[in-house]
Length: 186
Image (tube, rainbow, N blue to C red; front, top):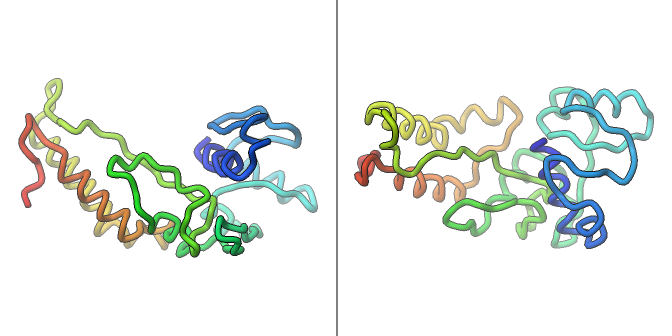
């Protein structure tokens, strides 16, 4: 559903007709074609039917030797989907709340059908019976994910965060608090 959300969001941005007739979301009313569940299902259809065009995430295509296409971006440049071009899609000015779709990125080097994976946490971690230690462990994990954890993205065929995305993530993580007091010591 995340892949569908990103793909249909892109189509809605580049085609007024698509936006008005189909729209975007985790599930849409496709105007035609065959459907399948998840990357494995769609990949199975792509492999079985010669000449098929479908959409799956890049990691799945790379790991299963499935051909993929370069897509013309906003600047009129055909961009191949690579880990670098996906990372470049987010190397643009990002809103402080990180609520952004990377599709149709203004980055000339960015692949136009790219997206983030978000993690949603409470800004104030002092809720219910949550301990400070548990809140601190969460903040430490998030910090690790945007720093040391980035070394695991490429071996898994996922793009690392751009420098601008890391900077924004740091600001957001630093704003997480426990009863009004910052958890991450500066």
